[in-house]
Amino acid sequence: MGEERGARAACAHALAVLRVRGRALAVASLPAAFAVVLLAGGGTGHLSGAGWDAARWVVSVLAVVVLVAAAAVAAVIARARPALTPTVEIPEASAPDLYRMVQDLAGRLDVPVPSGIALTPDCDSWLEDRTHPAHGRPAVPGVHRSDTPPVLVIGSPFLWWMRVAELRAVLAPVVAGTGPSAHPDIAAARRFVRGLDAAVAVADRPGLDPVRRLAARPVGAVVRVLLRGCREHAAEMERGVAAAASERAQNVDYGLRIVAQEQVGLAYAGWDRLLSRVALPAWRMGRWPSRLDAGVVSALTELSRRDRLAEGFTSRLGERPACDLLEEPGLVDEATSLLAARLFHGGPAEGGPDWAPVDWQQYPDEVVDRKWRTEAARLHRVLDRLGVDRDAEATLARVMDHLSTTRTGEALAAAITAEVSREATARPPAAEAAPEAPGAGERAGHETPAGAGYETPAPDAEAGRPAQVPTTAPQQPGPAPHQASARPEEPIRPQSHPQPHPHPHPEPAEDLAPAPKPAPPPISVPGDLDHAAWGPGGDALPLFPLQPPRSGRELLADHVTAMVCCAAVDTAGAAPGLDWLDGPTLLVGGKRHPDLAGRVLSLIEDADPEPLRSWLATVGVRPDKPVRLV
Image (cartoon, rainbow, N blue to C red; front, side, top):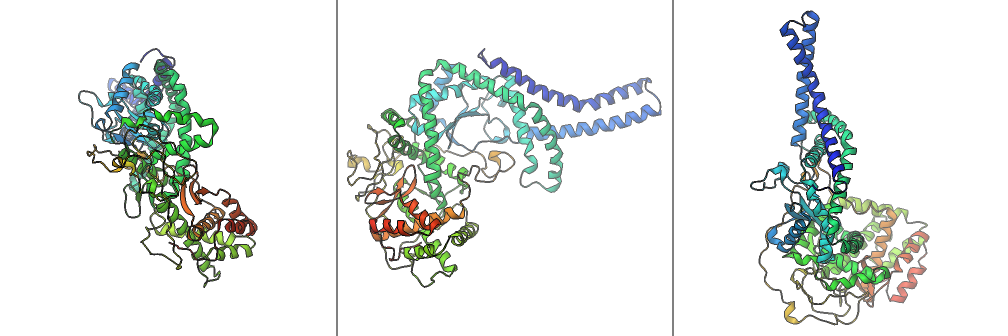
């Protein structure tokens, strides 16, 4: 490690961490040292007598007990499995250009090359040590396991939103961290701290018998004392390592890095909005969007269109996207999308009938329309149980009449909350509704195709281009995201609202045909996400819930809005749509109507149906007509 600012401080704090370990060993050895002195004194005749004999027995027994306890604590620390971030591992054969870029960065920075590359569904990048034998990574031939460089973990949204030069500039300080990681003192201090952190959770590991769990409690208490002793030094050591890596990376793309950091914040905002507004409704319906990374490009492009402060960001889309460094961007996007659903929603690790992938062009019909009709059906079931006009058909008028004649909707909101909870406990958490069979689940005779004249073209998942927005004119289905061209010549600029004409620059017909592609190398998610991936404690999924549980009033507003949207689709020719920033939306005449939420709240909170009736009359919705339910 060089003489960068923070390097010497990092080494000093690493030695302080190791001194904590040394003091712990000294304390554990102290009774044994006293026992040796007493035994030696007795053997030479200097410490003789009944008192000294009793002292020798007491101290010797104490020394044996302390040594056994210290050995048990040391064994638990050594064998405890450190936390491992769930990621999608990228073999070198699947991304040779990305590996070459990282190797070139390491060469320019004069630091060791990371031992591997992995992607995470988050807007962050870091180095992760995976040299512990429990992680199951094969050792590098000729290199000791403890000397193996860490793995470079990259946030998958960066690959799709950033350009190649921007990604290289952002990764330079991260790759520079492999230099301090190779220092023996820092590496030893990090291994010690990770072992302590993993040992704390041993007592909470699922599957332990009561005896072992009881024995692990005092071990955890000792480990917590050690952690408190080295916590501040470990934090200062990491700050010193970060400062040293940042200083070393200043000579590599420093000017571009300042500009690229703006893209990091923008990507985080778009990713958070996409997950909470677009992906979460799909996950609740038992569908997981298979092109989340491509979708974030469309979300950020839409954000730049609406926000004048971000107007210049889309001009970068003509440059080569960083996802071009992957051989199969579509497959990588699908793997990270499934992992995101696993982490943020707790969905199953594999797809199935109740947990199926959905492309963006299928999102309005597969997610939005099914979501509305499922919630509308639940609303009418609850009304039936409350005894509200049991013989009435499934009409919007039934809902409006009930809410306009009651002072508050608390009873209905509580009943809906109870119904949602009952359904959540009666079926897997990944799917709130089973797939609807064609022609099934209709409560009334009025039937209109849910998505007539509507289509959401697929995003260009292969090249990080923004997906096209829905159009109202019927079109032939576009290529699936994994079939899109890997390197289009021109960026696709999305429109703010659906337009009655197709994209002004349609692709040639021969480009729409799917081309056979070679099978890529396997991409795996290391570790057991239920238990081992985040440490022996077995954290419950989802690890990072996107939103707190919805209140009864919020659930009631969602269900009434869904009923209004179903009535608009079935009686006024409206269509379900996808807004990249706001999620499911209703399109009437190809335009969004954001003023619907306020009118629904007036009905729920004030029992005033007039604002909603006026809106229905303007749009042409007939509330007295039955709607099709799931």
